[in-house]
Length: 485
Image (cartoon, rainbow, N blue to C red; front, side):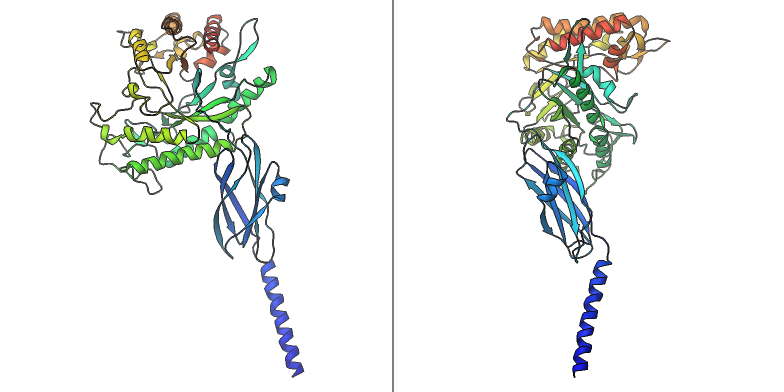
């Protein structure tokens, strides 16, 4: 019997050793972490784990702090698992590191995975601005917005004067996905889906995207003249949630966007729009920008038809529901909703009722030079006053830049027809000056806001031109901007 007992004990020990050997020889527990949202005092994140019975996770101002503060959360005993977690009690506008590690069934410790982010500023107000520069058009050449291209928008140094900060905010705007041939606004062409929406956010808010380059430009300027008086605002354009895959074909798909959403349902369009806003917030929080804040979002469509407007497509757009819902969603995070309609664009009279925070009117007068005056300035000024709009758009493009209109180059009119030549440049420069004069004569100066549309790259081209008349116009515009505060 004692031999039988010894055999049993040996068998048990052997089996135990086999189990230990099998566990230690198993796959190393691994995790992948994705920040899903971040606000002023809390971060939410998703952890995908493999071969982990638990995950350790912590948040701190350094990786060491995060690991020392780590909590443990149970997961599945084997195979893949997904956990949705959060960490609260954070300080606003602070850089943090999130650390996550998987723990195996036999005590194996996986590799720590990290993600950096910055909490949002705690505001008790919705930001508004005295000046906004429209940037970010990736479908036009040059497509890349780097720090050097941004710098003339960030600060200005007058001849013989001190350098000073220029625009308060920057609106990142795009109407189409040039790479995939999709449109972000109602009109002709194939509507962009979730993949194209994400692609656009990647161009702006990716680790090496335009917003990060803008922050680099601000850092360079801050190194010369000190930090800006306030963080420069970042406003992100929102694509239209277009009901049909091809809006011109009302029989085309309404489920093209992805995620099982049906854009025939207004609530599904709102789900997509909220996803876009949430994704932008999360991506911005991971950039660690020193001189920028996410200030809000922008309605890219330049017209907002409402139920009482005479428009046969109105029932497919639902702006009377979507615009207020977007405003509420932005306001819940103390972010603004902004808009720039085209000249007398539908909906401009009702911007306040829709919950929009700042609205600028496009005069569209710059392009009237080669024909009948379609957009008389008195009408623009009257509309701004009657609707109590926030301000006016100052508009021009490369056709007024002497250095760009050489060698037979031609510039477009409002319809895109190439009609302007080098002979028109002086008159177009005078048109830009007339915008500023009309703004002042209307009593808007120092009272209302300016949004600058300079086409693809005209503002930077004026600033960096070797032509004296180009630089002179750049200086005049900058002086107009900074003295309007």
